[in-house]
Image 1 (spheres, rainbow, N blue to C red):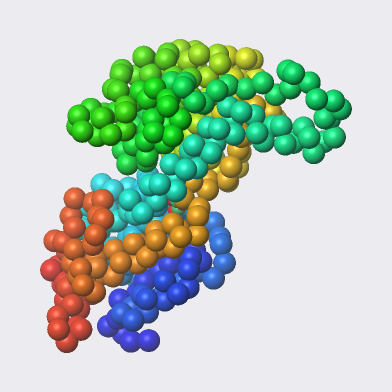
Image 2: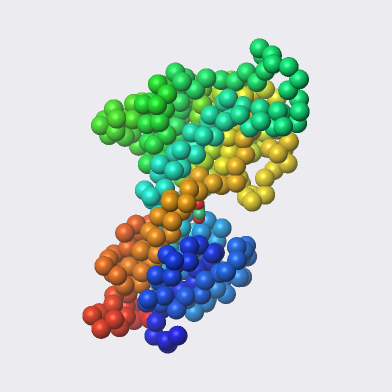
Length: 350
Ligand code: 8YV
């Protein structure tokens, strides 16, 4: 331990060999068991920390930052960063980073897996079989909806949305429609086979609708009872983004009453708690937020977060220039290590 080395808090057990890279430059306080933190516990962990490596579970806003004058960088392990109050971090000159790109294909894979499982009733069938209810083969057992040749709707056409579109267009001959804040360049539309439509048309025309947009106040409950009413009763809804995009009670009601055929959910408003109204339904596939959960991808995410944190704290080949910042400030108050390894910061913080 050395007094002038930055102190870093790692909120959850990740991969020791990757997180261990921080110890070359920092004193590391890493969680050794998975745990849930309340605001006070996060504030306590940030007090005296120069940097933090956190996951979607840890919410960091003005209150948590108030007692953390040394904090200069927060590296989020995840592409979504709605757990971070970016305005509050920016106001204090704290750099925040996320982990885009490395999880795109893995998360798109999971989106497709949920779509297929829900539309073809795979988990429902398996449960039924295991319950010993397969008395005799019958022509009408577990009839579902086709994926090939159907219309795929994608709400939010960022990197993961484009990955879903490619799978649908090239792999399954689907007619791909999307709705996004801005229209994609023509080259990307050509390559993904996707056409831009307005929100209502997307809802009305999709046989399968996948949500891949960031969660914010503006997108809160974007799929509510009114939106669900515009969808086909034969449609499938898949959410691999954030639970707050969907009014879960309205969704459960639509699924229970034949106004929507099926859903596949990887994310929930109150996760890890899942509403009993959803748990009670047979026509919804529920997974525990595993969109990016392949070993290779989770390792790549942690590596990118470590690279971001070290760079933001002024170390390594990208010192002062973290690869994937999400705050407006990316260098102004970042520390830079001089060739002696001593750390200086633009604002004098250590
Ligand atoms: C992560 C995710 O596993 O990247 C995201 O936004 O939701 C998941 O891929 C999660 O954020 C871990 O912090």
